[in-house]
Amino acid sequence: MSENKIPYKIYLTEDEVPKAWYNLRADMKNKPAPLLNPGTLKPLTAEELTPIFCEELVKQELDENTAYIEIPQEIRDFYRMFRPSPLVRAYCLEEKLKTPAKIYYKFEGNNTSGSHKLNSAIAQAYYAKKQGLKGVTTETGAGQWGTALSMACSYFDLDCKVYMVKVSYEQKPFRREVMRTYGASVVPSPSETTEVGRKILSEFPGTGGSLGCAISEAVEVATKSEGYRYVLGSVLNQVLLHQSVIGLEAKAALDKYGVKPDIIIGCAGGGSNLGGLIAPFMGEKLRGEADYRIIAIEPASCPSFTRGTFAYDFCDTGMICPLAKMYTLGSSFMPSPNHAGGLRFHGMSSTLSQLYHDGLMEARSVEQTSVFEAAEQFARVEGILPAPESSHAIRAAIDEALKCKETGEEKTILFGLTGTGYFDLVAYEKFHNGEMSDYIPTDEDIAASIAKLPKVEG
Ligand SMILES: *Cc1c(COP(=O)(O)O)cnc(C)c1O
Figure 1 (cartoon, protein in one colour):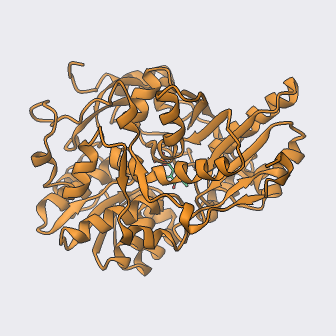
Figure 2 (tube, rainbow, N blue to C red):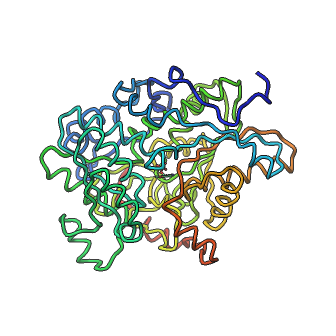
Figure 3 (cartoon, helix red, strand yellow):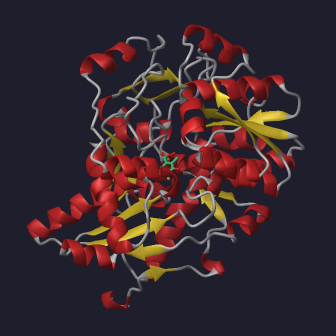
């Protein structure tokens, strides 16, 4: 089919929607390092993980050999409500930029939770229900994951306890109310309801909390409550697996028109949307079938790939969670409070960390005012109000398209537009009022938290 026939939106038919997730690890020669037990520093076994996570999810977490894992029918039925998500050819943006580049984006903000997180939330809720559990606990920062999980839990009639980082709980009442609408209970973290919460509160009274601290609380409650397990919205291998539906759909849509991207761009917080978007493309790259430039974009204020260390670290501040080998800024790293745009986790998916370490993908950091400039430019021509997180990818896509304008190259760029920004209007307001600043941590800031990394060989 010829180029000019490519529609503004490429949809897949229900038959073309993926019926299995793709497990990228199956094609990796250097597998991501295993999670370690923080007590013994030995790789965690399934038996040790099942008190924390659902059984089926533990299997997926540890499975590094099965390339395709069938998506259960019940999950596919739920996906039908908001998937396939559109793959959009950004004709309007291309024209505005006067670039010869061809830009595509995969839009995941098409559901009430407003982001890609629902792809994994529904899978995790399904496996919890199948195991006969009463409910699940989790943490949420800005609230996207908590919202997605509450939707998924209400669909399967599961109890959902969300520990929400206290500053967000106070500053983002709307997300909180969406979660409560779906029946979740939402607790500001740190809280008096857990041992670790009480400990953090006594050391740092008045703290606004952090993701790492909310994780510690949610894990504690899950492991101490009969019939509950903990679920996590990013970072883990199982989450990247579920998110592969993004990349599989994007690739199927592009394949329909014989389009091959040259550059694939995604924002990186814990790495789940990026890992999902790139999965089938990276698979081809690993098998030597095709080559792509793959770029992770992170905030300059929380630069785990570009300024972090590849080492074993805790995933939480309370240091009760397993150790993961990843690019990390140290679990005690706290991004500056004037950082608005999400993506504030100190570490990174160990799968993506390994790929980056092996030179299979690149990473770049961007400053938040330039991210909001890109967000606004995009909103004005493409119509979608993007999430600040997603706008990190927009920034890089625009930059690449502008390079093409200089060189005259007609590169094809694919990026992930992970969500909408309706609940981020306070940050947009700061930007519009000229009150937004760019904070970049100093080398000393980063060295101080890196110095506290646990001492582990390898
Ligand atoms: C959570 C979130 C992200 C970052 O998380 P990843 O696991 O890195 O994908 C990006 N965009 C949106 C809209 C999010 O909600």
